[in-house]
Length: 453
Image (cartoon, rainbow, N blue to C red; front, side):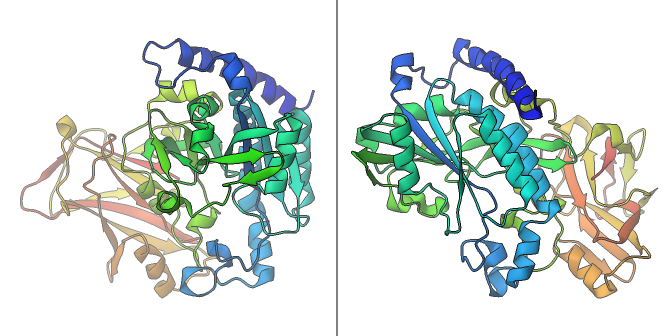
C-alpha cells in the first residue's frame, strides 16, 4: 500500500467523524442537503501547480519594474522550480489538500483539475500522477498554454460529460496548491449552485491561517479575508456543451463585475503562509516571518476544536503560539519591571525569533511604550554589507543607529499578549536583546518569551 493510499484511508476515517460532528451539531451553521439534491450538484475545481508562465503580468515573479522581481527567464525558471519553493507545495497539496478534498467531495460529483507545465521537474510530476491514481476525482492537465485561475471551458465540458450532465449550473472553484478547503466546503457551497445564480460568485470570508515552521503550522489565527483567492466559487452555466460565465475577475474586485455572495458562517479554508509564495516575492530578499505574522494578526487565536472538526488532517500540526513551545525560551522566570534602563538578555539561537510579551491581568501596551533593542554579528559566510543588513531590517520597521538596532513592540493585542518578530538576513545572527520602556512610569511585564523560528 503506497503512502498516499494510507493517508487517504486515514483521512476518510477522520473526516467521516468530522462531518458527523458538523451535521449532528445543534448549532449547525451550514444547511443540510438531501443525498438526492447533493447527487445532482457538479463541482469543477482547478489548481495551477506552479505553471511556467514567464512574462505574465499577473504574478510578482514575472512582472518587470518596481512591481515585480524582474527575473530573466532563466532566473524565473530556477526560482519557480527550486526545491525550497516546490517541496513544501507538493507536500501540502498531496498530503493535506487532496485528502481533505476527497472527504469533502464524498457526497458530491467533483472533478478537480491540476494544470502544470511539461517542464515541471519529474519528482513533482510523479507525485501528481501517484495522487491521480489514488483519487478518482483528480484529473491532470499537462499544458504548454497560459493557464487561468479557473479551468478552461473544454475541461469543464469533459467534467460535465464524465458525470452525464447535459444542462444546468456548475460550481467552479479555485484551489491554490498550498491552501486547504474544509471538509464541509461543498455542503456550504452547494445551496448556491442553482440556475438563478448563474454568473454569480461566492466568496468564503472566514478561514484559518497559520505560518509554516518545519512540519508544524504556528501562530494559528482566525482569518477574515472577504473576496480572497482561497476557494472562491463561480456558478457557471452549461447547456449541451456550451459553457458560460467562467471568466474570472481579479478576486479582490469580483463584486465589481459579478453579483457576489459573501459567506462567513464558518471557516471554509486553511491558508498557509510560507516562504516562496508568489504573493510575498519581491525583487530582493525580504524578511519573511515579520510580514507573514503581521498579515494574519488581526483576528484572534484559532479555536482548535473547530479546526479539528473542519480541518482534521491539519489539527495535530497546529500551534497557537508564534513558534514551537518546546523550543521557547522564557527570558525571565518572574515578572520584571522595564524602564529607561534596559533589561539585558543574551541570545544564542540562529535565525529569526518571535518575542511574546504578556502584561499582568491581560493589560495592553500603549503605542511606543516598549522598545526592544538588539545587537547582531556577521558570520563567516555572510554576503551582506552593513548597509544591506540595515536595509533588510528596515523592511520590517526596525530602526538602526551606531549602537545597533531597535523596534517597538506592537501595541495591538493578539489574544496571546504582544508579539514582536525579528528576522536577520542570512549570515547574520542576533546576539542580545534589551527591553526598555521609554516612558517615565516603569512597565511591569508578567512574562517575556522568545520563540526561535
